[in-house]
Length: 637
Ligand code: AMP
Image (cartoon, rainbow, N blue to C red; front, side, top):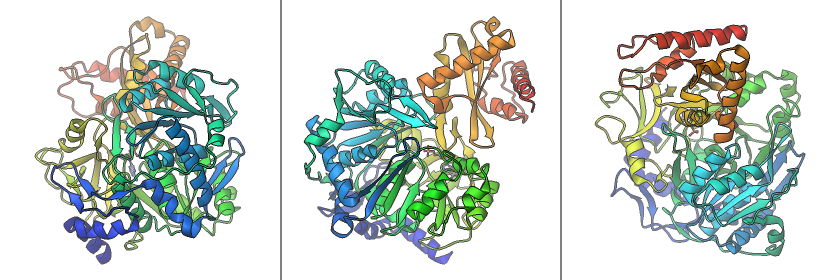
């Protein structure tokens, strides 16, 4: 581990020298004055005074040597559409989109909300923002209107870019009613919605704010829009993520630090080379999509494969056939997708020629040993788990093959990545843990380039939320539990907060509770995460009704439970929908009225919650136990 250890140590002890070297991976129109400004902790400013542009580095810079190489391969098994864009094509499309946006008033520093399905125009729109110096904020297409409206009001965008419809599993999802509702709910609705019309939705959206993309694209077909040279620390994007409160946080990222971090990561962690093809099966609405569908592969001059569809439609062999057809070298997805594929006919995997594939990367949720072993045996290729979060933008823990190939430890995403001063700390004392002792995963100041700069519009929240939760230390908390062995390998042991992880997506239980509370019949609710064999975790809701008689007979109870779950679809989006809604007459609380969430979660998983000396009424526990058992019996467990 010598090479790895030296490399990591240098990145922590001599960050200036380390990152100055890495910064050479990026084009700087104006060189930076200093590598790191640490005058205002916990804020860090990387490459101050340097001017660069993410779009220039991802697109324009490659025109000289790889204009005719594919930059973006788009495959939709929902619509049957397949498109290829060379770097020259991508450059032309991004210029058109940038010209259209500019004609609608978008300029440097303005926010643009992107609410789109997985279509190439989403990539054009993000890169066009980067080109103009506008700040994109992509909202996952599965979020419902109130969630979209809340993000509009926080980001106050100049423009919303949307489409007529998305598609999933063969079903068309009409965006028009969602956009319309969000526009009327939002206090800061933008003047225009730029509509990409896929001709999928049965009804055409018609509203005064609507501007159609296609005719404008024609109008600006030959447009050339220069890249805005941004100071390294100007914001590039905002990406909202869930936390312990109902209000999502806008994770804000810079320009220069992000470019350097991603360019380094694709080399050291992913071992991607210019000309390679990478298939990241995620969504542009998540951080993995931002970093590893779009920016990192393009910064590195690779070909990126963008996929709309599920891993099992038309059948469970589709991803493996994509590997064969497009000679994919690197693949990246979440463990949930692999657990889904594990249930498919293995012949589908073995029928494909996977010789181009070098490595499969997995992240977003814990990778269990059976899944890891199954997929690496089935593929006969290395599988690399990596641990990070929206806030960091790139992996914190991984086996970094481009630094030194280390032995794999099943059940652990590996060792701390260069740049991260990752320390496990005792939750009560804040002191570093001994090896083998469970602690909170923290990061020392400064966070490396590419990590969040602040919470959009709320520096105080950034400091309070992330830097003041470990006693006596000004360190960044990941809100994850972990344990480190004597060789430095870390195992992730779940969240320290009330955030759950369903199929690799982070959901705040508070957000789901707020959505459920908006149903008229609900007096009180607790949402907890429980183990799920496929999705990692599933959300369960325990509801106290205003009128208990409403769920007196099983039929009425089932109907009401469905209605309550559907409220979540409408308020938050289907990703937040609880797997089950249970009715109880009271929730376990402390005498001071605090919900005993961990106790509820334990009971829901069939474990005993242990001693609860502060509980107000212990019979509430019995109710949870009974509700879970009754549901198990009904399901024939
Ligand atoms: P998100 O910001 O939505 O990507 O969620 C980040 C959270 O997902 C982390 O804080 C962890 O709780 C979890 N997570 C991400 N990657 C891994 C991994 N490789 N192993 C275990 N948990 C992970």
